[in-house]
Length: 443
Image (cartoon, rainbow, N blue to C red; front, side):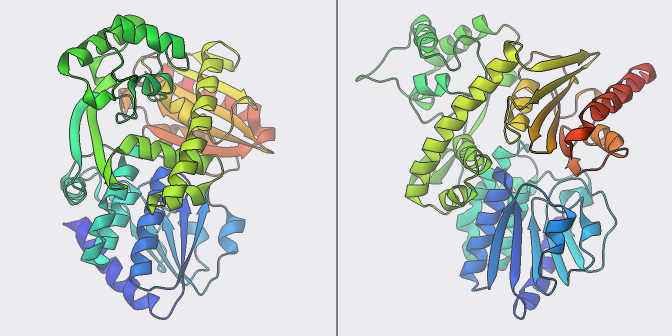
């Protein structure tokens, strides 16, 4: 198997080089990046490798130039689109699953599923885990982190290597409602759910109680049972009540596989752990996210608090979109949400993703979110519905616009993003609209 052989060769070279060089880990700040960093940090600590770690939002020329040229550099969940920046570095390893945009350099070893096309869909945490396992079989206990990273990055759990990871993690997979956390009281899960936005329910405790009363679900011993403990009849009634409020839902959107992993000596919903990690890091507390991944119970408590605040802010952001507060530009099969300073730049991607999966727009519709970040603008692009609706590819669309602007960009077919100068705000919108209008004519 090509990927396994590539990882085996990378580990062989890494072990030899790390004997005489300090290792610098650079990882992305989302769930996939944080879980990748946790896996690699634990594996290198066990191997007694001298290393340091930095968590970053993105790569730019100035940051890369600041890296020690004599160190062994390993990029996690980023780097595939920035290899042209690494020529001055002695030895570079890239563990990533994003699009490869530049030519290979002789000093760089890339481990990326794009090298083998679509035959295996892995996230960066999955690759990092397989690397760690090749380094030492004892690292099999880190498999749960790879599952959390996979769930957090919306990568479909398919293929032999993903199945290997699921088996190593001893994951419990159950069919159920895709509202999380599935292990927490149902009323709270519904009220604070950001995975499925239900008008009048999400963010509304009274609306939740009315929904549960309608579904015939009552408290037991003073509290509602968790979603996982609902029987078949209760689950069916709850689904019916949700459908009555959102007739545009289909079964595939709200019913699917729930992944339960062993964490803190009990089964936890992988989606909830992913959300805790993501929220804490995006709120500026990446060290809390990392400590949580490494089973620090105090970090878990702190992450719960951060996540509660994050979810409330996210619900407010979604409501601001629904109420029309956010500037909205709509065209044929696209919508541009220019939030300016009304939604944080670290949240605009999540908002765009939720809207893309909301069924409010037909499959293939392009969802573009924009948010200010100092003198820059964060842009997040998603394709509504499936992972590649109507053949559109978000990374190709954003790349075609960024040819005319300065800034970093990257992503996948279903989700891509870029950072542009604030002064290019109107130019970006006009270039994108022009590109989409040409696309319509070609259709």
